[in-house]
Length: 408
Image (tube, rainbow, N blue to C red; front, side, top):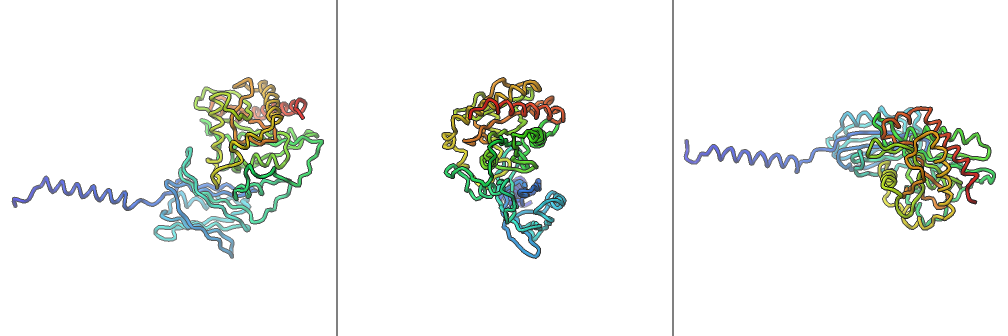
C-alpha cells in the first residue's frame, strides 16, 4: 500500500464533498414552489380564485379573446394533483367563469387559463402568510360593466376600494336612493365570508355560515315591519373588505348597523352572548380587546389588494358624532336586554373596543357576538334552527325597542 494512502483521510474528503453537494442542492438549486390549496369563490358581485402555495409565487397575466379568457403563467412551479383539481371547482352558475384549465407549459412554468362568460376586469395580487394561510395569489374577476342598480351600490364601492379611492378625505358617499322618511333603514352585516371563514369550532362549524343564517332569519322578521327597510352587506358566501361594509351602510343612509358574529376565545370555557360598541379610547376589557383584534384581521385573512386604510385610521375617530355614539349604546343595551332571555350573557353591559367595522361616523352601530363558537356547547347550539331563530328574534325585539328610545 502506498505510503501516501490514508483511508481515514479519504473518508473525510468524501464526507466533505457530500456535504458541499448537499448544500449546493438545497441552496443553489431551490426546489420549485408547490401548490397546497386552490379555492374558487363565486358570487353575484365578483368571483375570487385563490392559489395557496408553500412559497411566494411570481406570475404574468394576459387577456385573450375568441374566446374570452384570462391566462396566467406562474414561474418556478411544478403542476401537482392539488392544482389540477381546480378545474372541478368551477360551478355551473358562476356568473363569470365558464371553465378553468391548467397545464405544465414548460419545465418551469404552469399555465392557468380561465375561460370567461363575460367581459371582466381582473385584479391580481399576492398575500403573505397569516393565520392558517400560507402564501396566496388572489385572482379577483369583476364585471367590466357595472350592471347593478342604484339600490345596491356595493359593486361601485368595491371598484373604488380596489382603486384606492375610498379614504377619510372624501365626502360622504352619495347615492340616488330616495330615503323614505317614514322608514327606518337597518343594515345587517353577517361577519366574514368567502376566503375568510371567521372562527371555526371544534366540530368544524364556520362562523361565516352560522351568522349568515342568523342574519337571514333576522332580515325576514324585519321585512314584516311596515316602518322598516332592511338591507344586508352580504347575502352569499363572499368576502367584503371592512371598509366596504361600512360604506354600504352610509351609502344606504342607514339608521342603524348591526354586525353579527359568533367568535372564539383562547379558552373553550368562555361562553355567552355579548354586544359591543365602538371605543375611541381603548377596549373596556382584555377580552374585548382580543375580540377586536381578531375581527380587525378580517381584511388580511380575506385578502385586500392594497395596503393601508385611511378611512379607518385615527382621524376618522375624531369625526364620530356624540349622538351616534349615544345611540349606539342605546341600541346595544336594547339588544342585550332581549338576548338575556335566550342566552347566557358573557357581560351584562355593552362592551367597547376599536372594531373597524363599527367606525361609520354617522350610523349608530353595534357588533353582536351571538355565542362563542369555540365553546363546545354553544357551537352545537349555533348550528340549530331553534337557537338561530331565538337569537334573531331577540335582536329583532331589541331593534324595535331602540326605535322607541333613540335620540333624534
